[in-house]
Image 1: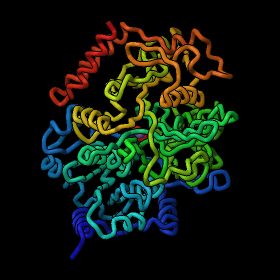
Image 2: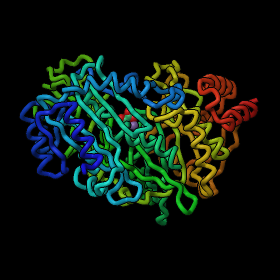
Image 3: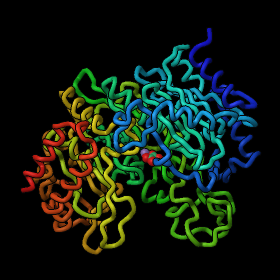
Image 4: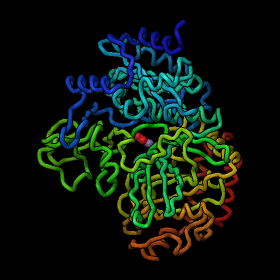
Length: 578
Ligand code: OXD
Ligand code: MN
C-alpha cells in the first residue's frame, strides 16, 4: 500500500501536472546538475570563480523581493485561533481559492520532491518536512538551509510523521500569491513567490509558524531567536538566546567578534534565526538551532560589522539580488565606501549611481558549517542549556541599554511589550514603533494571547529558568548620535548578563527592572563616559507611562485570550512608575 508520502506526491502531481518529477537525494552530483541547469537557463549566474568559488547570483522578479506578510494566512478553523495579529482564512475557503492556482501550475516544469530535516540528523526532536516545489532555486537553497535529501527520508523511516509543504512559483503575480498555513493539518501551501521566507518552507513557515503550534500542543517552544555560546576565562561556557525583529542585527550578534579575546572571552555561534527549546530533566531550557544555513541580509555586512559572516559567504553561497562588478564579484551597499566602477545593479542594468545597487533586502544563503566561529556544539541533538534570554529592538529613545526582569513573568511582559522602529528615525525624530512581541509578530502560528500564556506556563515548569533581559543598542542622544558603539562591544552587556546569572553583577533597581550599577559593566578600552552610560540606563518614568498606555491598547485586541497574569504584570509596572 502506498505511504502517506507517496499518496500526497501522487495527488499533487495529478493537480499540478508537471512534465517531470524528481525525488531529491541531496547529493553533490544532484546539486551540481541543478546549478548547471540554472546557469544554462539564466536563473543563476556564476560569480568570480577564484575569489568566490561555488558562489552564484540569482535575480528575482522585481515584485518578489521580500516576505509578504499581508498575503500570509493562518487557516485555523476559528478566526480566534489565528488571533488578531494574523491574517485568517477559513480552511475550506483557502482550499477553494488556492487549489485552482495549483491546477496545472507545474506544466512545462519539473516537480521536485524535497525531503528535509529541521534539526540535526538522528536527534530525537528533529522533524521531517517534505517540500514539493517547481523551483530549482528553492531546491538549491533548501539544500543549504536544511539537512536535505536521503538523510531526511532515513529519519522518516517510511513513517507518516512529516510536515507537507506545497510550493509553486505560479505566475509570480502578487495578485495570485498566497502563503497559507493549516495548523490543524500541519500543512503549508505557498504559491506565487520564489522569495526566501515565502518559498523556503522549512524556515518561517515550518520552523516558526507550524512549529509554534506544535510546540504549544506538545509543551516546547519554537522561537525567532539566535543562539550564541560565550566562553569565559577558565573555560566556563554559557549560552544565550536572543530575539530581535528582522533587520536589527541578529546575525551580527550571533557572530560577534569578542573585543576581549585576549582576556579569554570567546564567542561562538549556534544559530542566527530560530531556536527550538525544550525543558530538560535538570529543569533548564535546552535550545537547538533547527537550521543548517544562514539566510542573511547582505547590505551593511562588511569586515567591520561582521567579519565572520564575510568569511562564511565567500564560498558556496547563493546571493539573491546583490549587484555585481565587472569581474563577477558581488557588491552591496556597505561592503565598501564607494561602489566599484562598471557595476551591474541587482536588476541587471548598469548602475549609474542612483538609488541602490543591491536591493536593501538582498540575501545570502550560506552553509552554517562554513562560519569560522561556529560552535562545536551547533549540531548537538540535545541542544545547549540557555542561561539568559535577551529581547531587543531598535529604539532611539526610552528603552535602556540593558535591563533584567524581576522574575520570569515580569520578563514575559517585557518581551511582550517589545517594539522596534520600522525605519531608521530621522535625526532627532522618533521613528514609528511597531509592537513585535518576542519578535514573533509575523511568525506566531496561533493567537498571540495564547502564546503569552504558553510562555507563562513554560516558566512554571522550569526550576532553573533562563534570566530574561531586554536591550537596546540603538539609543540616541538629542542630536541623533548613537550612545552605544554596538557590534562587538555588545559583549560587555552579555558579560553583565552572565554575571547576573551567576548571582553577581551589581544592579540598580528601577521601576522597569534591574539595570547595571555604575561601574558594573566592563568598559575597559572603551570610550564611553559615565554621563553617556547614565543616559543609556536612564529610565524616564513619564515616557514609560506612555509605553504602558500603548501596550494596554495593543493588548486590548486579544480580549479574553490575554492571560490575566500578564495584565497583572502591566498594572504592577504602572504602579511602580507612580
Ligand atoms: C528573516 C526575517 O528573513 O526575519 O530571518 O525576516
Ligand atoms: Mn528572522
